[in-house]
Image (tube, rainbow, N blue to C red):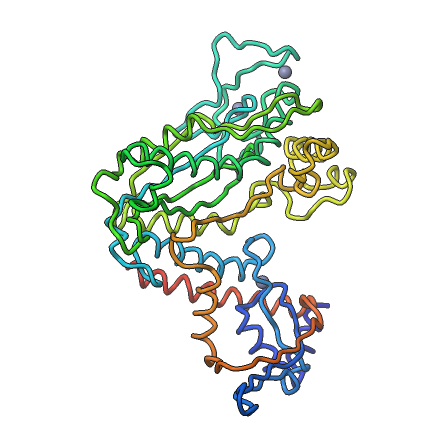
Length: 443
Ligand SMILES: [Zn+2]
Ligand SMILES: [Zn+2]
Ligand SMILES: [Zn+2]
């Protein structure tokens, strides 16, 4: 069926133009089609400086990328986004894209922040480590053994599942995911306060001596809890172009982070459904100073690591991408029982008036988490917007400055099955070319 459709598509007189558009959008899996025109005029004389219209384009429309960052939704767009993320993180570590290269000499650390335990779960058997061996093998109140002597391989679906689902603190877990973004912003504030204390400077005057720039990416662990990977860099008072004061060393920064992570918490107002709840970080905290060049915690490796995580979401960890409209839909989502229980818990807590601001129903499919995949401070490096503009300028003519008159409308989205197959071919050709380029670069 599809084969016949492909033959018909290829034989179409407009095929070459269509293929051209699909190549331009990198083989996007869900392109958006727009029709319209843009006219730029000189504001004084009214002379037309630039005119673009889809009237002469194939089918009278132009394809635009869906720009989804998630690999599970649109792999080609997720790769473009991962590339932009890599540039964004890398520029903050090594300079470039408008950031001075001297930043590579500033104190820079790579931090991983985790959630606390909400009950024992099965663990990955790294280096043949057994899951949770206990000689005394205690029983929980539900009669389940709170031990596991297996060595779980990476693909074992048991990893991240609780030893006893009835003991597991599901509502704490969902609330923690929901509060993680607030916990992070409080942590950043406390880090800045601790730095001021270390330098003997009043908190309000810290900016006159020191800047702390960061970027962070969120990742779902197998148990469905969020954790954060962050880059934190110290600058002088004028941002990346200025040297931090001599007292602001990696050690001072690391101590400020440890102290902040241990003391900070994000409280919820009392609600009868949950009692008193406050989110705190887990005890597992990794801080590494970032080295120059190559190696496990080098600036190159950290940029690649963060770029890889930006394409992942809860779907990549056995969750689901689509928002839930009813509680019944949870039963039909192809996820583990553990994730379904997290979704139901979020859905049910979404009813509580005191928790309305957490929007737990709208976030039930992401297990309560509603934060951004990547956040950064204003002075970290460049922006996605600037990177996209640079790519567009590279790909096409620079538009003249003038009075812009633009009228565009949405005329459709997505592919027919035959178009989808050809677009996937375009995307995999580009992926192959990119991999080859990477190999040449790394050789
Ligand atoms: Zn796309
Ligand atoms: Zn186990
Ligand atoms: Zn139990």
